[in-house]
Length: 627
Image (cartoon, rainbow, N blue to C red):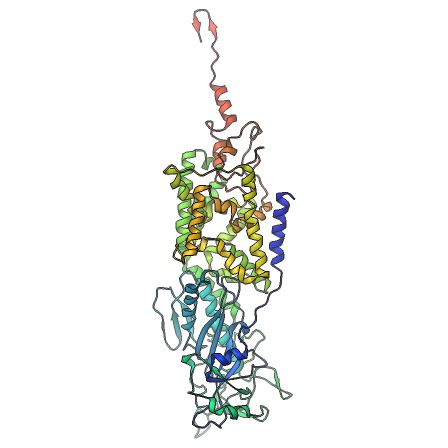
């Protein structure tokens, strides 16, 4: 089995894994909720139309009375699916009261690769906790991680997450979209209206449109901030015997979208009497009932023909609002984008005019070092544009669960770089990214230059050993891809084989095992030139596996290359040139050293021979003269 066939199989594997089905369900059963809300609430049965649980409170002064519906609790994964940086949803446990106010928002589970450790998870937990006290009508803006959060009755300005823009946006859309959907379906709240009319805490279950939600006898634990009663246990027997029929219940509810008629001698606050209903087209007791104030679409959205209110219902128009969010983000990073595009343009011009760019070995060394500093400093540490295998696994995760790649649009640096890398794969192969645009690769090479300056040279491995070690990265890639579907929890840890997050995203400020691994990878580059990139990197393997898409052999060659000239092969630090002189573009890092040698009559054997031949003087003897 030759190398191109194996790489083709890996590429096919990438595509095949992208169509495998996956699904995400709720993590907490009713028993879990009962333990969580013990001595706080009584949890009712899960609703038939929406996977949420009603929360009841018993009046301790009247333990035999009917318990009051106070709130709903749900996992966001059961209501909406908004993907984070990992391509998987972030699951939040949300408690929402009958007025549409969030009583609690607690992180249950996430797969965000940058925040998988305990410190990172605590950051996500703190971010989600900021939603306590907000309403489904609030406009949310996520500021920098260093900003002080603030809020008023209509807007909230939350503290963001450092290096977690996509994750923060995903959590925001997850919480607010799910809450808005529940508010419309269960609370009959028109989220475009104000809070002038809303259920009060003293309102009984019989006065709420969802009086059909039957409580159970088991109390549930609740976060301290959502505690609404001291102890419901004395009334457990009474709760268990509650048999109120839904069909017999008639309630007085406020319909926010309907302006009450004002009759003579009556106040404008008078409400109309309507029968209880659960949601649009829901059948109860054989009767087809629907919401009178707003039609609920299958996607949980409301129509956009509400005059002057469209901007307030964006959380239910997920595609439109997501587009608005990332467009605003791109505009806010206009300067960063302009600098990146300028850098990519300069690189493209240099690679197109590669002979002129590398005509002088000294100039090439200076320009290449300068660009590597730009890659490390700006693209990596400042703009956080380190491409990673996680981008690929996240894309596969999203596609396999019926999603798309729109969640990546919240990271303009990543999107632009991937588009550029995808295009240059067709022209120059993997080397454009691995050799010029990978911040961690740039860091390795810069450290090697420093090591060389102080007299430390990298060791050149035997060709046979080098060829075998280069297969290790393909094994790493295959293991990662397979584990996505065979052992997902292992995959979450296995991606840490990339030291990018530690060295670039976190500036080495992580737990010591991660820092030790990143330092070890850099030290390997001092011993063997860019050893991590050549032998371990799964992202490099992924790019190399699709290198067959490259259509041009862009490195100039002569007939003498390989036989008899071996100058390029012996000087290639990546050992990507065969004894025959053929370039292995899957292992080429596009450093342009061989292009520089190709033009150098001091290093290229054919040019050396031509120079010597042209400089040779044949003396001609003439009588009395010597020419």
